[in-house]
Image (cartoon, rainbow, N blue to C red):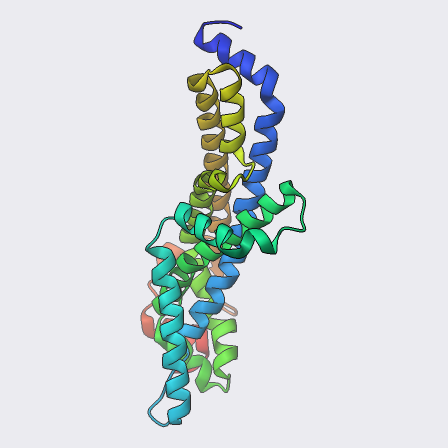
Amino acid sequence: MSQTFFGGVSFILSKYWSLFLRGTAITLVVSLTGTIFGFLIGLIVALLRTIPVHKTDKPLKKLSVRFLSFILSSYIEIFRGTPMIVQAMVIYYGGLSKALSGLHDVYKGIAAAIIIISINTGAYMAEIIRGGIISVDPGQMEGALSIGMTYRQAMFNVVFPQAIRNIMPSIGNEFVVNIKDSSVLNVISVAELYFMSKSAAGAYLRYFEVFFITAVIYFILTFTVTRILRVIERKMEGKDSYTIHGSQSYSKASIHITSESKSIIGGGLK
């Protein structure tokens, strides 16, 4: 084996490329799947936390909403306030390992990783989505309700699509963070990229070369994902110019839409 740096890198790649490839694939699977499930958990939690309570509502409803809000807030604070590596140890050895005992070790590790990332990501996504919903002009909801929509219809057809567009950068950031943070799951023997790198490094004790390769792979993953997400964000923003029915073409830069006109456009009436 060559004693030079680049010679060592070349040797490690030629001998352990399959380990790096397998670890990269598992990292992508658990981070992407965990982010998707985490988004769904966060969506449910955020919608439940934004249930409106009015003075005219029955005391039982007020009490139920407040109790539910307390439970959901506790979940968010606990999982945002503790490291994922600690959560992984507590959840896995606290019962998840036994629950998944019927699976093959490889699938057991992947399933455990997805569950842990999903629960952790859900806590962050809940606040991201709730912030996105709050950021939408209240006139949008008022306008939708004024034309006969129910609260659920107004939320999913008017408010939520705008909230998603606003929080898309934060959702993408969570995915990038999960790609990197999945490395901590090696403590429960999940065979992701970092775990595979340790196996390759231990064979010849060439840690610098191995983890240089690992760092490059992580950078390529996050850089590629970031660029793809930026393209998606631009697509969601729509075209730079558009035509109002029965009128002339306008560009985004040529007009200023006030909060009042946003309410009229989004809801039809105010």
